[in-house]
Structures are given as C-alpha cells and as structure tokens.
Amino acid sequence: MRRAYERAGVDVGDLGPDPVVAFGRWFADAAAAGVAEPNAMVLATADAAGAPSARTVLLKGYDGRGLRFFTNLGSAKAAELAVNPRAALVFPWHAVSRQVRVVGTVVEVGRDEVEVYFASRPRDAQLGAWASEQSTVVPSRAALDAALAEVAARFPGDVPTPPGWGGYRVVPQTWEFWAGRAGRLHDRLRYRRTEQGWTIERLAP
Ligand SMILES: Cc1cc2nc3c(=O)[nH]c(=O)nc-3n(C[C@H](O)[C@H](O)[C@H](O)COP(=O)(O)O)c2cc1C
Image (cartoon, rainbow, N blue to C red):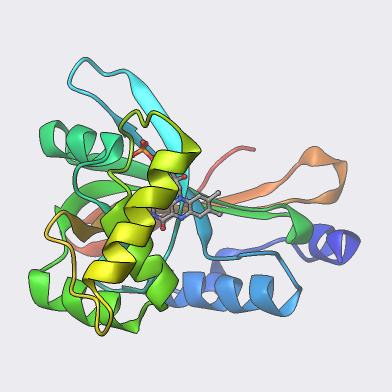
C-alpha cells in the first residue's frame, strides 16, 4: 500500500478545486486502506503567551463550514481556544503515505448541534463526560470510578448533555495535502482561502 501511494503522488488535477471534496476523497481512501481511526487528528492550540500544546481528538463531521470535534469546555484546550481561537490540525495517515494539515480559526458549535451529537453517543461515553472534569488533577483512579458510579445512579435513564461539554469547528484558512513519493521528492498541495475562493499552490517538500 505504501509503495502504491508513493508511486501515485498527487497533482492539482487529481484533487480538484474544492478542498472539502478532496479531503473527503482522501478520508475515504484512508478508511478503505485500513488506517486505524482515520478520523483521529492532532489538534494544536496555543495559549495567550504563544506556548503551544497538541493532542489527538476525533473528527466528528466536516463540511464547507469546517471540521468539527467535541470536548470538555473546561479543558486545557478550551481555555486556550477561549484566549486564542486559532488551531492547526494534522491527520497523520502514515499507512497510506499521506498527511492532511489544516490551519484556521475556531468557533464553538451551537448548543442544538452539541445536544444532537451528545444524544447519539453510547451511554458509557455520556456518563464519562459527566464524571470527568477533563484536564483537572484527580486524586486517584478510585475517585474517577466513584464519580462514574455516582452519575450512573443519578441518570438511570437518558443522560442529558453536561453544560460543560461542547464542540468546536475549525474553519480552515489553509489545507495542505501531502503525498509521499519515492526518492523523497514528495508532493505538497496547499489550498489558501482568498476573497476569490481557494488558491492552490504546490509547495517544495
Ligand atoms: C485516539 C484519541 C482520540 C481522542 N479523542 C478525543 C476527543 O474527541 N475529544 C476530547 O476531548 N479528547 C479526546 N482525546 C483525548 C485528548 O487527546 C486529550 O487527552 C484530552 O482532550 C485533554 O486534552 P487537553 O488537556 O489538552 O484539553 C482523544 C485521545 C486519543 C488518543
């Protein structure tokens, strides 16, 4: 698979004018090739002083508005996004010798959308969202388990959306599609948002 992709490379004509369509095609290729968790993306944010941090989150929907993920609104990443609503994303699809990068601004997902998504999650995940004050220090594993047992008893039926849980959408300013080629002269195509639409440029590898 790796060798096949190295031979294939990528050119402007292959990806087309719309980066969302191009991303969809590559996402489907990654899934079909058996990339584990192809929707896992590294999300980089920075605090007010510019200190960066990065972690993996799951892509839960994308369209012309941006790329959506869900998280705890009290987390470290949420605090960073509150003071600096910009982010970078990386999809590291090593198994197919491809990488997609996104840089953009970040907006919070509307409450209606958050509730629809939360309702679709498995019960364990819903309870976990209530039990875990993400990014805070906990005294022990036992304390987390006790918190989970407490919320499971509190919500024997439907689990409501925690007020401190929500989502964000990264609104791309640039997308970059990277394809590994033999001989290390890899292909990189960047889509840059301009007033006229997307400008596509080839970058040196
Ligand atoms: C494969 C994978 C998927 C993850 N998906 C999410 C996610 O969708 N949302 C989330 O809040 N954390 C997710 N996490 C956990 C984050 O990487 C991170 O530990 C957590 O969000 C706290 O980050 P923060 O302290 O920087 O806010 C995931 C971790 C892994 C390894």
